[in-house]
Amino acid sequence: MARNKRKNRIANTLAVCFWLCAWQAASVCIGQKLILVSPLEVCGALLALLPTADFWQTAAFSAGRIIGGFLLALALGLALAALAAALRWVEVLLRPLMLTIKSIPVASFIILALMWLRSAGNLAVFISFLMVLPVVYTNTLAGIRETDARLLEMAAVFRVPPAKRVRYLYVPAALPYFRSACTVGLGLCWKSGVAAEVIGITSGSIGEALYNAKILFSTAELLAWTVVIVLLSLAFERLFLWGLARVESVLLERSGT
Image (cartoon, rainbow, N blue to C red; front, side, top):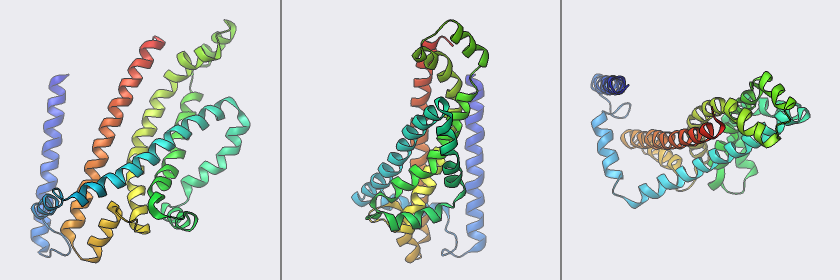
């Protein structure tokens, strides 16, 4: 196991090095910094940003709102999925709403949100929430529906209380689907949240920093902020999935599976 992990790390490192070299080669071949700067120049721009207080305030501002929208979507998505699984009419009622949210382009929602919200400060929260909600709801509901029918029948025969059915039958069945929804949602929330900040030009956000870099034709700074988004997204994803794995192990141990 440890050997396979080491091989995977080496392979991943080599893959990253390959694409960095390809990026450097493309930058040299193009020879125009306005179009594509080298990785070294991006690192230089990033190092120039790191010591400034504005950088950390901007990163914290955007991260807090995007993560907040993601967590709100998780909470409501779980609650609605449980309700829809228990009440058929709730599922029927929510189906067109979730399909509509998944079908409408994120840019349309951003423009509508700018019209609805008084301040663009909470735009990233709303858009992140809206993009993640149907993913969590749909996957969790599908997981609940996959609960073994024979086990449910046995639970009914032996009159197992509803709380224990949820704990020992529904939760273990839904967990893999919920984990998959979280993995997809983690990527969606950052992309949609930052896009909302760019279009809404939210003051003090990463989106505003990207927009300003574009206005000033500062390709190095634009890519530096892009690297920051990737790093923040990966860091939160690793932390969240680690925490989720810990919660899963505790729940599965208590349920005896």
